Image 1 (cartoon, rainbow over the protein chains, first blue to last red):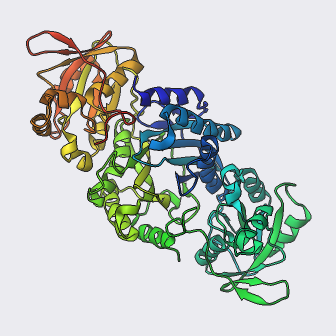
Image 2: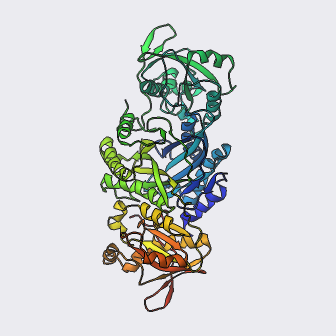
Image 3: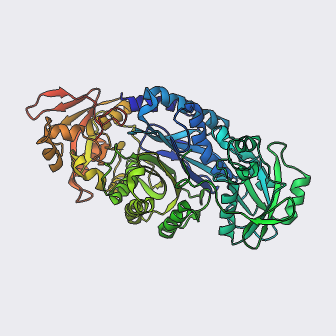
Length: 311
Length: 311
């Protein structure tokens, strides 16, 4: 048996079973039985040197590789069901079987939390760095998936958790907001939702662009994380700037009708992470209302996976 | 708009529409309506320097990136419906937008042949080489998907097309055998099928291992390609060795019951590519019957994506 086949066998023994899975790891493709729900699918590529440092623990890298596309499903209020995992092992990782198994240990830790079997994938090597591409398949849960489009003037803007400074470690260990998204979508009308992967300002700008609206954020409401404060001691930027522009928070940004906002704040649907109203939808532009009452324009900037400096 | 967003917009305008597609490119995830067929899913990673040379035309690289997972669906006799495309652009490709569009031109050429829309994906950059990960989603066509398992003693072994020497160019331009697989599966009973990606010997060994059987190939029947002959003038190996062990033919290897074999050969279901009976399933081992009647053991060797020398 080739090294490739023996590692695939190793995964197969650990990949979990699923009711509707007919054929999983070890054939040319996976086969799943149809269901009656809409299917929701996301794919994400994780590149050594861009999305994780070469010396990051492989278990944390594996966790992140799966957590990112799951966060995309959360942003649609979908429930993850299965994952396909493609891995290209770099040259610098030492014995490929050891690195591979550590990477997969992290993937399986998160997969087990969601009872998601790994149903297939690919394994190859790379001339230089390691890359991991994970595709997750999920389904809508009772209600239709929530798209980015649909924000309306006077809607309120909410965010889960705290923002900024993810590079200090949160970007490797974050927990995708699946349960929170499903609970919110079941209890309330949500007009638009996105997960914040490229920074609050850029991702809010995306929602506004596609919905044909603008937004105002309130400086005194934005939940600035401890990590954002810590980062600002090492940079020229304020903690608020880190919260607005740093990437990889993987928190949910929700746009809800005015009448729902009060109800959400009066009956918080979960204790943790916190849920904060941080602004409202306006006719155009992206602006920040300062604590002193003045309004300043915000650049729709943030992390750009093609042009931002390497981490 | 960021460069990433503008390239995603460029793809969106060209990615094709699909009846059951609710939400495609430009949201956090794709949403598709359920159908009543079993779903068949494959994912494949293409790495610069391993699966294509750095100077290969990007259009051919794009074609191959999509053709490989489609070939996996063909091996299950499934019909491709949608694709998710994740791309990490390397540093050496010149202007990223130019390389990206050329790569996508090749992807879309093949996608259009199968009327498959691209429903989502990911775009990032890489510190060094380019990598492309494509996930394809298809469905069974009338009959259940054909797995690798199920070969039985006395079954006959068939192969489409000609084998060997793919590295001379066929590996970038091959046409996945989707129609052939569907026609064969509709008209005949097929006990087992695989696409030959790592060489006839290795992939036949995989079918035998999982089915708990062995096989005998006939030297005088194996369809040796012109490219295999050409490669043998530059190597120490015979044309037959190239046909047995070279990777990336992407032809179908079929195992059919004895009673179907005669029927298939008497009523060839398609004119091109040719379909050849090349051996039979035995109780154990992997052997070659030489033209002189002697039997020799075959190593279950071939291309190993983790340990074979770089192209």
